[in-house]
Image 1 (cartoon, rainbow, N blue to C red):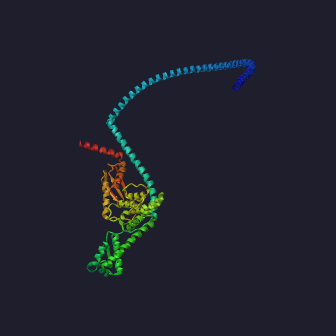
Image 2 (image 1 turned 30 degrees about the vertical axis):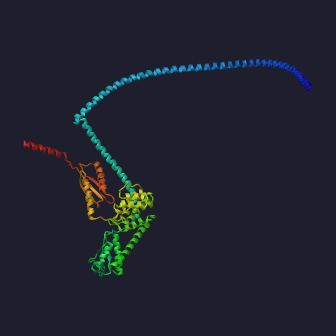
Image 3 (image 1 turned 90 degrees about the horizontal axis):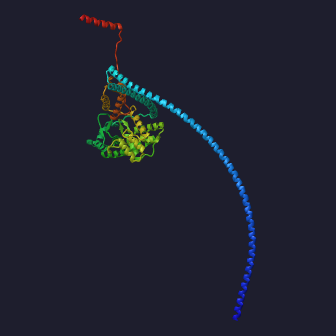
Amino acid sequence: MLPYIITAVVSIIITALIVWFAAASYQMKSANSKIGNAEEKARGIIDEAVKTAEEKKRESMLEIKEESIKAKNDLDKEIKERRNEISRNERRIVQKEENVDKKLEAIEKREAGFAVKEEELKKQKIEISKLNEQRLQELERISGLTSEQAKEYLLKTIEEDVKLDTAKMIKEMENKAKEEANRKAKDYVVTAIQKCAADHVSETTISVVSLPNDEMKGRIIGREGRNIRTLETMTGVDLIIDDTPEAVILSSFDPIRREVARIALEKLIVDGRIHPARIEEMVEKAQKEVDNMIREEGEAATLEVGIHGIHPELVRLLGKMKFRTSYGQNALKHSIEVAHLCGLLAGEIGVDVKVAKRAGLLHDIGKSIDHDMEGSHVQIGADLCRKYKESPIIVNAVEAHHGDVEPESLIACLVQAADAISAARPGARRETLETYTTRLKKLEDIANSYKGVEKTYAIQAGREIRVIVVPEHVNDSDMVLLARDIAKQIENELEYPGQIKVNIIRESRVVDYAKKKFYSLWKKFHRLFLTIKKI
């Protein structure tokens, strides 16, 4: 079987090869025929393309020739225009060069003229300097002064003139400023004073208690003086029992103690039972009444002014000011008056009225403190305001109301003004005769200490000082400076309410006589006659 299979396989292979070769030959023939057709088509296409290309080439050449001819024409035209423009520019340049040459020639001529004039000026300067020297020499010969002396004289004259002009200017500016400031200040202050009229009596250091009869004096004194000693010990007040009918005098510099003693004594007189134990009881009750009175007076002051939110301790201290005086003026009434004035002034100038009233009410709060705290009432008041959380504006107003520190707000300035108004109004305060005379003498001594002052008079209760100067030593311009210096020294060395007017007076008197010519000739003839007679 195997040989048959091999034979079959070989025959199949041979048959397949024969078929493949036959197919290949057929495909070769068909391909050759297709290639021959394609070559013919290709040759036709190539020929056609060559013809088309030749035609396009010819057309392109024609277009290029036309464009080149056109471009050449345009270029020729542009070149022609450029040449024309260049020629025009050349002509302009030639004209400008000609003009420049002409200007150069003119400038050279002017420079030559300037050189000649410069030489002439040099010669004139030399001549002027020589003439100036001659003039100076002649002036020195005529005047009898050297140039340096003349300069000194001229400078002195100019200095005097400038000094006079400066003094006039200062005077004019001061007058103008004073007129304007005084006008506005007067309007504000007068309005405030008119709206706040006050009439407070001066306080004293004694109180008088009326008695129902003179027998009560013995009961107050008690056996061997026990009652009066107990009362004086408990209150710290001196009881003066003299010949005054039906009256006992209580004397003390502490008005609170004096008030406690007065209330206690009145209660004892009404009760009728006067002995040491009863005195102690009544003094305690009077102390409580005075404490309540102090608190009520403080609250009443805040309500009267219209200020709320003040610390209770400050309210109590305000109440204590009812029993404090300054130059005879009640401190609480003064503070209320200052508060009202501050409010009125603040309303006039457009400042916070409530803050101004608060500052005015608390400005003298330091006066309510007893001797247990050291320092001025200004510093004590500022410390109290800081302690009880008052605003920095209030603290500054309290510190600055006597000029101890610089005011930092308009409120502080208003407090200063209102304090001065309240203190300076008629009847507000009183001074001792010694203080008054000392202040007048000090005023006159300050003015007399300046050179050129002849006489000094303090008038109008020390509110004006008139200074008479020697006219030969003080001129008109020096008067302005002298008045300013005296005023500054008074401000620095004296304490006074309100203001002090410094009035400088300079008087020059020249006496001469008008004579007739005949009289003068007669006098000459008479003298000549006497001379001849002597010879």
